Image 1 (tube, rainbow, N blue to C red):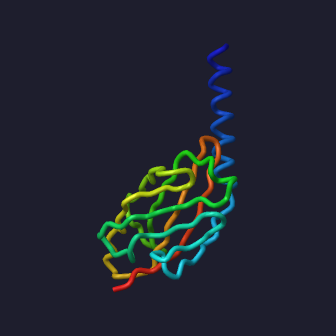
Image 2 (cartoon, helix red, strand yellow):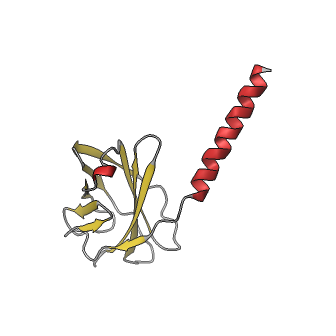
Length: 140
């Protein structure tokens, strides 16, 4: 009887988590004219150490300026393009100081030569997450 109750409670919890994930509002796309100069998005400042180029490493920096977000204990970034599967490219940013997260990242190869990128930033604090969609372009 205990086993059946445990299985039932796990199923209810899994369903609630799935429903919560599906009910999450879609992220708003924020355009960043020059990511190497930096962009501010809803309490987060994102920049790179130089203009990103495909398959060339660059440093991605994220600074949290909203006190409500500083409790994040994990930050991830991934890159994609509209209507194109870019494969696995999820990077974990490392906390360097309170509110400062850094990672060395690479943009995946784009066989079509497109320059319009979407970066998904994910901040996690254990039970909650915040996601930011940032659009930027590469040159040349």
